[in-house]
Amino acid sequence: MVIVGGTFEMAPHQREEFIASRHAMMRASRAETGCLDYTFCADPIEPGRVILFERWESQSDLDAHLSGMRAGPPSGEDIVPQSVSVVFYDATAQAPRG
Image 1: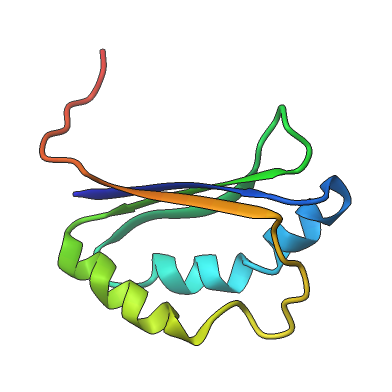
Image 2 (image 1 turned 60 degrees about the vertical axis):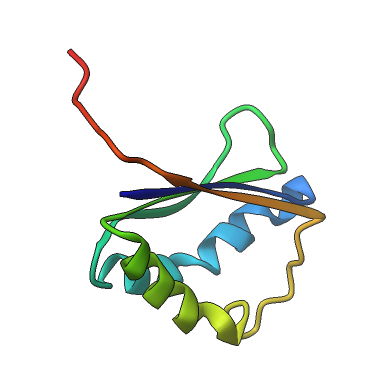
């Protein structure tokens, strides 16, 4: 399993529009082979931060997704984050808590 975690920093007044501009991307990504989770969401504490969380069954599934993302941001995108940080994690084991 591969986990992708990221943050996007932007002006607080742009956050909701930024997330809304990714709704179609989230739906399409969730329909891709191997996608377990794909979400852009508002940070509940920091008003200018958006969190990205993805889980993929395999690196090859994520690679296929990323090859389709080379086209760039969603069409009509005019909100450019001030900073972006995205990290990929190779998760070799998982267990439910409890």
